[in-house]
Image 1 (cartoon, rainbow, N blue to C red):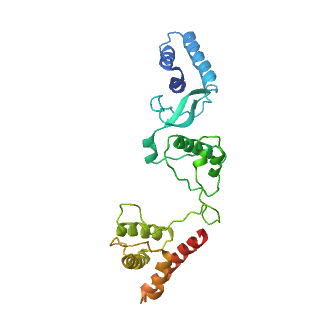
Image 2: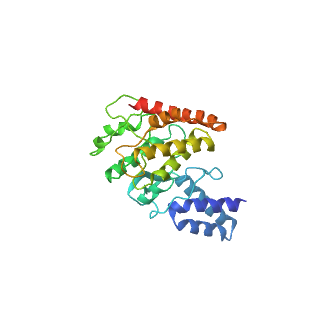
Image 3: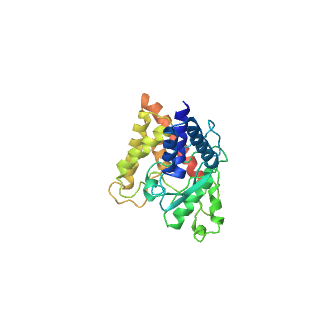
Length: 265
């Protein structure tokens, strides 16, 4: 058991002292006398105390750090600290941002600082970004003494300001067919409002009719319909049976979306 713990300690020392960690273990494992074995163990413990800051048997949880090549990139995250030693800077690459990236820590652990440091890196490289910030902490980036920080724009949702965030959810992204966008939008509303497939069917029927009336499908529209238009259409349409219940739920969704629109205007 003692041999296994010493072997694991040598593995944890490897990122700091390189191949010497294998030599340490080899010296301990091949020692011919009890005295030489004791001296090799003492050397391992001394290096653990120097680099990892813990005595034998009380070592911390140390995950293997990435290699310097893997840690290289464009956008600085910070310095890699392993035990008591600062190894080298850790960066992210552009391709990392199209994957899932999660910053985890306890409250006050520096998550916001790390995220803001990344944003300054994106700003430096002229990479556009969007932050949804409920606590309004990221707007302080505009006050950072950084050449491009004054170009950051802050949009307030639900507040009166000079930069109000105006957005019509029914206006889909470029090069996406309106019917495709309607399906994506209705699916999102169905999940966010826990409404069910029947409500989704009613909502698609109403929005599809408004898209047709506004000329969206023909490409002759001057503007897109919005949820005010959808709510007015719902008031005119008559349903029977279960669809009357679905209509009530659909009106609730449209009412919520209208209320959001009114607070931003």
